[in-house]
Amino acid sequence: MKTIIKSTMARLPLLSVAISVALSGNAFAKITPEQAQQLSKELTPMGAVRAGNADGSIPAWQGGITELPTGYTAGDHHLDPYPDDKIAYTITASNLAEHKALLTPGQIKLFETYPETFKMNVYQTRRSASYPEHVYQAVETNATKAELVEGGNGIKNAAVGIPFPVPANGLEAIWNHTLRYRGESVVRQGGQAAPTASGDYTYVGLSETLLLPYNVKGASPEQLQETNILFKFKQTISEPARLAGTALLVHETMDQIKTPRQAWTYNTGQRRVRRAPNVAYDSPGTASDGLRTNDDLDMFNGAPNRYNWTLKGKQELLIPYNDYRLHSDKVKYDDILQPGHINQDLVRYEKHRVWVVEANLKENTRHTYKKRVFYIDEDSWQVAVTDIYDNRDELYRVGISHTINYYEVPTHWSTLDVYHDIQSRRYIALGLDNEAKMYDFSQELNERDFTPAALRREGRR
Image (cartoon, rainbow, N blue to C red):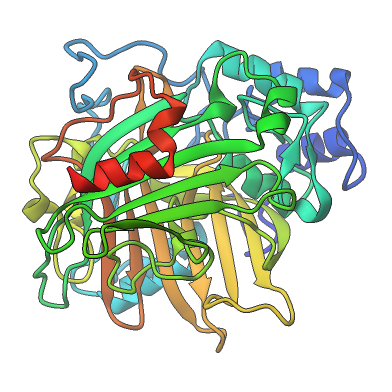
């Protein structure tokens, strides 16, 4: 297979280079209104290159999914809008060398770790990501006004859409991931599982609600700066019985220098709500068996202040995309969860352009991860893959996000996130919802639902 990409660290297609240089000027300058108009010309409204690639294997962006598939009703698990697409080719350990230019070091390591079972079924590329028109308009407005706060640990002068459609540095790119549009509120049921080496697992049921003031249509930067809240998140464990009722509440702030993240937990044994300042950075995630950190959730979340962030450029990469088969309610958890990795027959890979962002741990700062490399889908700003290195500079973990377009919103978001621990040969799959109710983006949530008192009530149910 031919590719226009030759170098690992210099993989930015020429068109993207020219546009980025033309729009961003110096490394910290805001773009002008005239430059922002490129978001309806050479660039998509989200800042991606509108054109396809040189050999046509990545098509031009045509607006993504803008209509509901026939037969779909809100509340259903999402129907595959591309049911007739066939596998173009399959990568296995035997032909891996032919395709390494389109893979990350972490993806290659998965082939090497599981040579008999790990594979990638590659399909034609469908640039399906799409968002409401008012989000596109907000992005264009943000482009000329948004700024990082001191040290990059927050943003200002932005609302609703991503703040930096043409990122000038790694911090701007990772904030785009954090602030990508996911509706105004979400209620979801599902869970996670961390299979043992033999494939045995205990399903941990989770009920979660997410309130996103930053995304509310008509929200203003002034309002957001006054409240200093980006989103509020509440999570309650429903099963197994020994964990049922344990609950977590997080208030994520817009300016984390002004007010750091606030978190509370409810423990059923103690029957009380406690402040939880350690729900951040590299503390273990909820019931994760030590296989992911708190800031691994959503591929990355929280304050970026422990790392130096570098924008490396763009490359073409094979990533999970339009994973509607993996998402289907016709599939059971037992069909997905296998020893070593999830069932790759259910996964659809496509070639897409991604931004590459490298995070290196600052001197005199502590974190389990010394280096993290994020591969961010240009059309959605969703982190698709993250390669994670330990303090010995060895590949430690690989995070992979399996995404679909939730076209009733519309928004492009993960249906399942999988975190592979290379060294222990285990993984945790977070977001299992095939046997649960589908995400509900229509419920109107109240601020009163996200208080410590509400957490106590939730935990006692």
